[in-house]
Each structure stands twice: as C-alpha cells, then as structure tokens.
Amino acid sequence: MTSAPEIKFYYAPGACSLAPHILLHEVGAEYRPMPFEIGAQGTNITEEFAAVNPKLKVPTLSLSSLGSVAEIITESPAVCTVIAGLAPEKNFMGEEGIERVRVLEWFNYLSGTLHGGAFGHLFRPERFTIDSSEEALEAVRTKAKENITTCFKYVEGRLREGKWAVGEGFTGVDAFLLVFWRWGSAYGFGMERYGKYQKLMGRLVERKSVKEVLKLEGIKAML
Ligand SMILES: N[C@@H](CCC(=O)N[C@@H](CS)C(=O)NCC(=O)O)C(=O)O
Image (cartoon, rainbow, N blue to C red; front, top):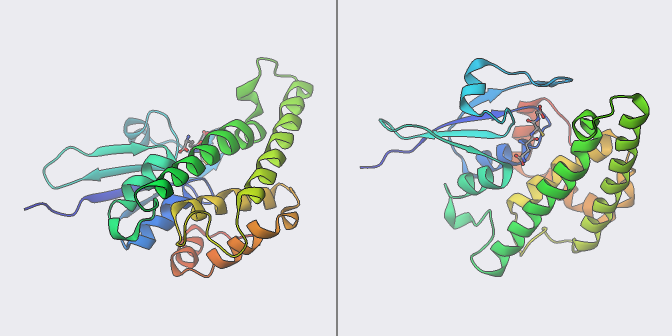
C-alpha cells in the first residue's frame, strides 16, 4: 500500500513560491507550511533549511512517504510539476502534447529570462557586477528595468484576449504570472499598460485557491 506523501513547503510571502503555493491549494494537498522572510541579505536561513536546500532559495518542497527518505524538489518549474502530478486529471501543467510543451516554454521563460535574467538583477545587482560602487549597481538596475519591460511587452503579446495563458483551462503558468504582475506593480512598471495581462490577473484572483493563498501569505494581488 502506498501512502500519500508528507509534504513540507518552504516559501516566502510574495516570492516566486507564490505559484506552487497556489497549486498546492488547487490540488487540495495537505502540507506543512514552512514560511521564510527574504531580507536584504537573502533568505532568512535556518540550519534546517540550509541542509534541505543548499541553494538557499524558495520554493523548496520536501516530499516523503512514511519510512522513506524525503525527496527535495527545488526550482519553480519542477516544484509546480510535482504538485500538479498530485492531481493529474486537472492538467495544471497542460494536457499531454503541445499544451504541455507550451507550459514548459512559459515556465522556462518566466523563471529563466524574466525572473533570473531580469528581476534578479534589479533585486540583487551586487550579484551581477564585481564593481561595488553605487554607479555600477545602478547601471545593473537600469539595464534590468529595460529587460523587464521587454519581457512584459512579450508576455502581453503572447496572451490571448479572455483566455488563460495556455489552452482552455487554468494552468500553473497563470499562477506564475501573478508573481511577476505583483513585482511589476510594486516596482512601478506601469502594469496598467498591459490590458490582456491585467484581465487575466483579474480572472485569476477570483479563484478560491488564489484568495486563500494571498490571505495566508498576508499579501495583496496589486491589481
Ligand atoms: N530558479 C529558482 C529561483 C528561486 C529564487 O530565486 N527564489 C528567491 C525568491 S523569489 C529566493 O529564494 N531568494 C533568496 C535569495 O536570493 O537569497 C526558481 O525558479 O525556483
């Protein structure tokens, strides 16, 4: 007999972990929330967390079935894939075939290009230059803002009026898009310019899972 896995979910309010957090509620999984604050120096690290995920990043998922060693899953696309797999009939990572490919395409773009390659530079410019002068850091931030705007324009261009990001149903991509919507709003990227994106977020926040998670994380959608 196989038992349901015991799930620990490491997250920080308003971080990229928001997307898998929403998926955990969509699939109705029981999980133990492990909240962290991300401060100026990065994740507020505990020894336990450093042992669990040496990358020191959220989201991190620990999955164990009784008597087995926990599997540690890191990286948002992988974490979302595992969670979606708990309710495979809901196709939260897209239906098999081209939809699943599109979901992967979106996830890679959002986590690699928009998050790692753009917002990451705005949030942590010191990680992207060996020059610690304020001028050098500001130059990294300036370029990051340009790159973020390019990404938002691309996202807006890819979205379809009145539809979820991929296929006909809600997927993890829609939840992931909320992360960047909120960051864009918080950092003054003039998000009201992106009409299709804004409408998509308006539909998304009507979902029970999204309402629950925003409340649990103590954050607003920033629409
Ligand atoms: N590539 C990773 C990035 C994870 C990441 O950068 N998480 C941020 C929160 S949004 C974090 O934990 N930051 C702590 C730090 O950089 O010190 C993913 O997609 O999961």
